Image (cartoon, rainbow, N blue to C red; front, side):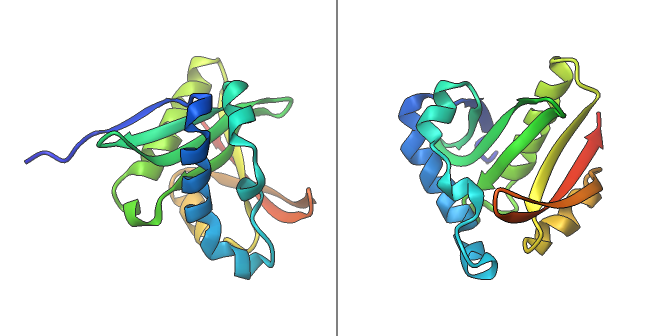
Length: 152
């Protein structure tokens, strides 16, 4: 039997609670390591959805992943990628990243960028494996961040 497909769609304001729950579940393990909630746990997902910046991944009709992406002065930015911990290894995160890369290309960008907390060492192993190159480390909004860019 074929597993259900992951679909990515624009979030509605009504998805805000589901999006926040997913992000909180994904980032909760990092609270103790960082010493405070990671920035995505503090976002207003209803406001971001109203601005057209939030996308959700669904599996079997349930929200299992969240993507926050938008254009900035520095290019096309992936602000947040989150998936429920129990979905790790199922392709949810990959589907969200590939969706973001497609959106960036469709909007005429030649690259895409993102950052991760310096204490989220798992991401610092993952991103280079999938084509992202570190280009900066700096404090921003009270967090030590590592910035990556990928040419599309």
